Length: 403
Image 1 (spheres, one colour):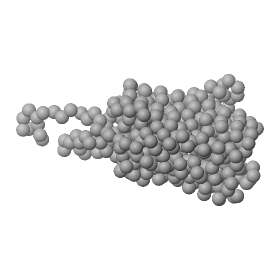
Image 2 (cartoon, helix red, strand yellow):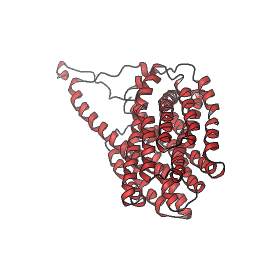
Image 3 (cartoon, rainbow, N blue to C red):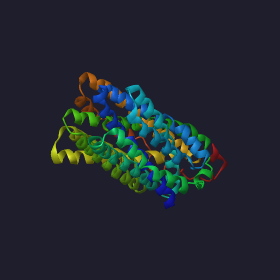
Image 4 (spheres, helix red, strand yellow):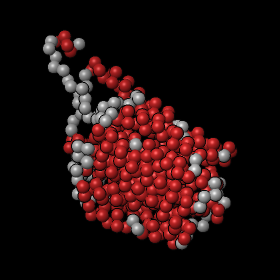
């Protein structure tokens, strides 16, 4: 495992996601000044996420071409700049535009960082990828906590520039530690040649697996992104202070970081399909508890819901990268982009519905959506490395065997 490369990519991921996580807090804080509705908060979050997500496949191609160099550091610096400027925007459209432009830097960093992290892992790519995402989710966990404290003490105009400046060491580390191009032996490996007799059935199986894979990602992202974007408003409506619901969202996300790391280990050690299935099914009751409990039960529900919802994260990304090992940056960017974009779109739709029937019932229903995602997991390959372990080619004993 190439530790220096992994640490640099992970630190950059931590820094950019710490800024990303403050988005919901920023929009919620502006809701009083600009009189924003729940749907406007959801729409702003969706536009930001679309900009960061839908550009990731393009940035992934660039990361493949540059062999993992330069792009991560430049992306983080770009996001820092526009987050520092966002508190000074005079209106809702200007605020959303500034944040959306800054989101492009996050779109650049994620596929570049993922490419560096997965190749740095050597024979344990899922574990290394989980370390990369644990770092990002740690940033996501600390972001709301820090933003809540800052908003409550020194305000947005001083706080967000300070948070942005704190990410500068990560830019320097990525620029220096990721100067050398990555080397990935899997990218040079030739794919196995399939038998003509099995190509048709394999193609049908691949379509079914692909459809289930896409649906699983969309369903999981629906609940996860909706909770991340709308929980601050949900708890604010229950008269919680910003620092309090920021800490609650931070706990949810920090537990998600632990779940991501656990998922990476489990994905390298056990049946990936079963790991995804169990985590999705068990998450539902704790998602409900997060919304409808108090005290110690609320804290436990937030931690367990965040952990279980994030266990499949690294597993799904590594499975996608193994489909095209020579284009890991592009595949990682495409899957990450779809995760974020699908989650942002459904979170916005949820916010529109919440304006009509209330935020509580909408979030309660979304808490049970991962059950459907768990059902989709049964269609996925059950082996630990499905894309890299083709069935052995049998030596034909007679000419008739080629029929």
